[in-house]
Image (tube, rainbow, N blue to C red; front, side):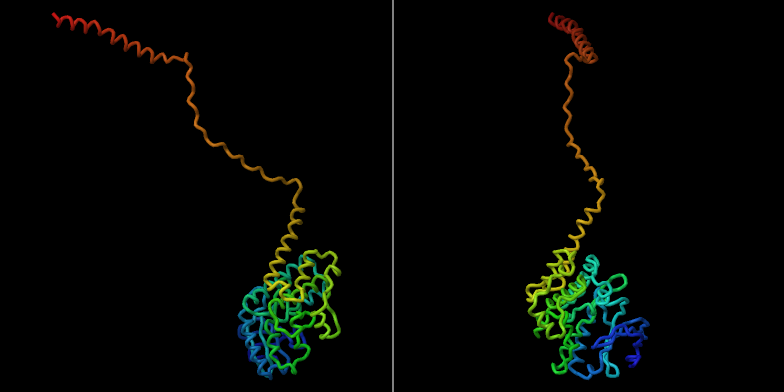
Length: 342
């Protein structure tokens, strides 16, 4: 195996391996940064239809910029191998996270589920359907941030002629939607179904359907009703149980139409679930702060009533002096009058 791709990307240690590809931790020698490099198995590069479809899907996925989606930096072909260069995300896959814990706690599982819906919902708004939603394609960082990866690869694999497909190309039958299992084209509601299978496994530690062959799994997804998650997780809230069962409906129209819708339902569930806890944790002796009392509107004061016995003696004296002054002039005017009359 070559250790340098396109004279730029240095392959280091393998991070994961599957039937379709190997993911390596690598180094971008030009930009001097750590990256993840997915190298598809030999033979894919020889198929012109797949090469063109892979180029289109990688280009579309590279335009997705969201904190819950692994960023694609580059893709190419070197020495007969198709590779894709992605953001390096430290941590484990959600599948490994589930296997380590058996059953994820309700609070932690809801937080991861909301992040998965946010990333896939963003892709749905951009017109992209993932087509291969499963916990193996979700990465969980040490601080529990979830990122979805591998957008478009399943759609590119669909370009291969049917007689060239293998079981790994067929997809992941444990997480397939009924319409995908029937050979019908997937839609955003198909991703929602696969999210439901993922959440079922996250909360119960097991898959809703198990069988020895992919054909039997496809039949179960098309026809069988899965056992309610509460059968395996009695402490699971009944509302969350109903949400998961609704998502696993056979008909796409009976599910939530997009991951965004499912995400909003989970956010509402999380908020309602935390309200009783917040109320119960409040101290019992805490009382509501006193409300300010409104001041009465200002009123106009009535003029004080005068006491009839309250005499203003200063004014009365001045009045008396005026009367005496006028009265004292009366004899003078009478004298003038009679003197002129003679």
